[in-house]
Image 1 (cartoon, rainbow, N blue to C red):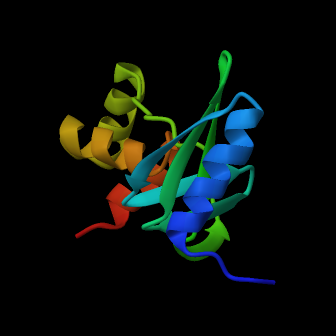
Image 2: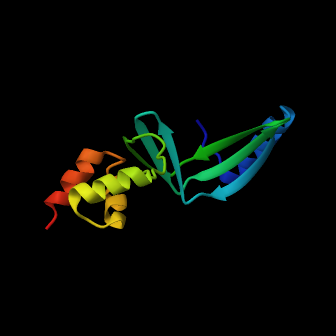
Length: 122
């Protein structure tokens, strides 16, 4: 298969896609793109991003980039412990409330784990 120069590729894309009613816009190079699929996470560093517009729909095409894959935990939610949980952990572990709140956030709200961690600290 003949390799196309970037210029030839762009010209061919605009001709073919233009005939299909698609508007192609090169958005540039992204710093990184993260794709989370349940228990899997894909990270692309420095990929080129192209936007394809067709009527009311918009498609983003990610091209190239340095690829890495790992196991993710899905979308991360910001956890904020309740004041009652903070007071309980602080009183059981004998620590200030701000330290109890921080440990509860680190443990994702696991009261027993937070108390054990705080009690084991010198």
